[in-house]
Image 1 (cartoon, rainbow, N blue to C red):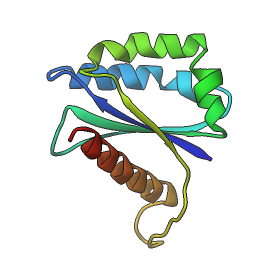
Image 2: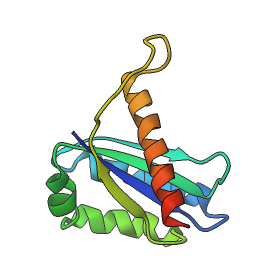
Image 3: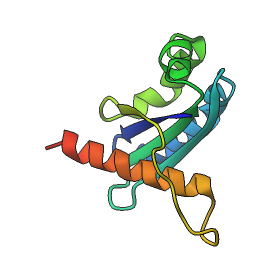
Image 4: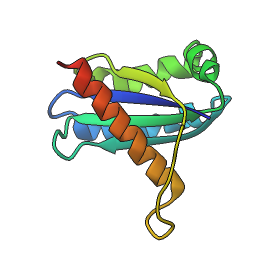
Length: 127
């Protein structure tokens, strides 16, 4: 599986509207061929910063099939107006994973790891 990591900065004051638009449009991703999962996390330290992780069968399911679809255009119409800047996108695959069986699910741990990668990528990009 390929994960698309999306670093999103929204305009201050539009957080609730962005989250509502994101929730209303999640089906656009989940109904797309090759999409397995979609999560959205919000930064505690910087509440206008979000990280979304989308699980795709292949990178082309995202970069070709979804990006050229009407669903993508609808997605951008619903959430794009809240962006403070263009989203930062990176595609990754899982190299290693570990965790304790008594603490959260494997998916939760993978998403946490992916968020750390995204945070590092965003920090390096803003320097």
